[in-house]
Length: 254
Image 1 (cartoon, helix red, strand yellow):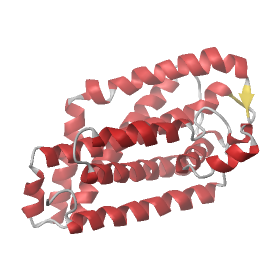
Image 2 (tube, helix red, strand yellow):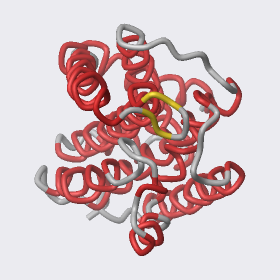
Image 3 (cartoon, one colour):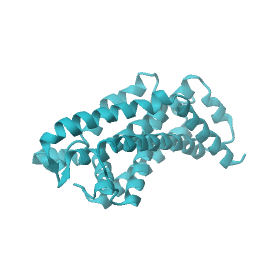
Image 4 (cartoon, one colour):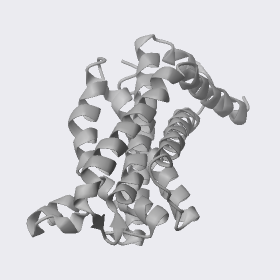
């Protein structure tokens, strides 16, 4: 069987799945983003002033964009793969002569596409409130793709291990959302007391947000090389674990 055809089929299915229901997948982040910029950027931002020589409105734009990329790349994969498990059509993939890495790549690519597409929508909404010129295009694009990959992989693992629909909402609600809000989206880590700065360094999203902020604004609290190393390390680790779960059939063959 042609692996390219199998990969393209899975990716196409994943993309059309969320495009068909765009009022649920693309419209809500646009509305939420507008509220973020209106409340945090306009109302609160005018009282805060500047951070690292940048207006507060401009400072929060990269974090809000990447936060949308994170949540939607994760949500696309976890909901799609678990639905396949729940409806028992995952067996069609398991019995087909398709290697596990093709299955994983197809689902992850769909999550990346949705995450980046939502990121573009959020970026366009931000232009209604501020005018940002990209500082470094390669870094901006690279960290956006890598971040979407990390959380698409995390969503895949969550979907495999989940035993009910409640299980696929636990991680986003109690892990992903807190880490996102505490990842330097709305503040600089330098504003925190010493002990909380140290604690924040254990949050991987902090490194991704700062690298993306550097790409857009040229401002960062974290070494950029370290951000890419940590992000790449997560991709390698999560990919290996995902392939292991598929190979063992954990959560899908029992």
